[in-house]
Length: 378
Image (cartoon, rainbow, N blue to C red; front, side, top):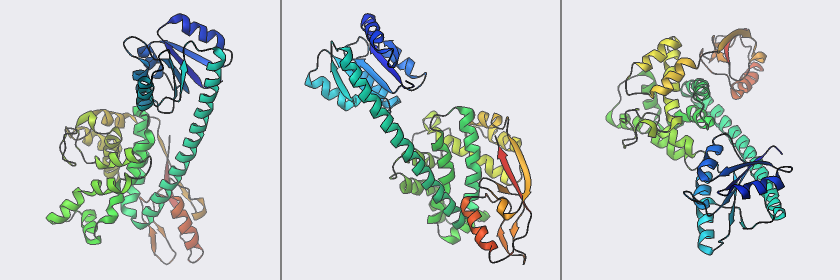
């Protein structure tokens, strides 16, 4: 009985009658009209919502369409005494209604419909969980491979991902994973650059006009690479706007500015900028202060979150052997073979792929130990 059900009608006596018949079997909440229903929706998710169609100010079609937008996993049912074809068609198109019930609706009929709706919700929730776990695993695999191919770019992005996670937690962002994944995959289009151009970017050397345009359009290339992957549309959009200034200038050159820039993109910008500065030896507090001084560049709200997101964060430094390495650690000393061959430089982020490579390398050549690492803990 953990899933909540919301019953919406503009007649209190109807809601009271439903509640008397259903409260022993279901976890029921009621709302007198659409506005009150939307306020209750903000308090937490509902598994099922049942709405009357004919209500003043906001009818059932409008309400269920808004519920569909705000909480797409909530299964939607409609009660109507006027089950005409036009109303049904509009409800299906706008509110994606699961089932229609005709008033007056016998309690046993409503109970049967609620049981079916709850079963649908459980099935959809389980499927979503499996899909998200599969997607997260695939994303992590891609990130691990890219780290091996282009460690300079992706080491920084993995470090920035932790910064983004802290920011989403401080800001209370709903889709926190989008900002984290966008931060991790932001450099993915670097693989499209000619090697000489990428080397110039890393060294800060002057670029030709053609090269400068290629670099500016990297977010666009990344957007194309990711936008067709299911559930990564928001991630692709965040990466597209990763260089867009809060005041509206920058790439892409459109009218999007301020709060219209996706929140995941605004978090990505701050997380990447802080990580770049701290990676060059700047203290984190000083790095955030530098961002705050760049008027119009970053979202001030995200910068403020960056100033407070380190509260309660500690860093642990330890010395381990190759077998003691674990994903998420950052190297503070180089990893070298006994004959002086550099395998990974300080600042490199340890991933599952890095550990597998080191274990294989250790079977062929002895690796110098201990290895000094840092691991952040919240």
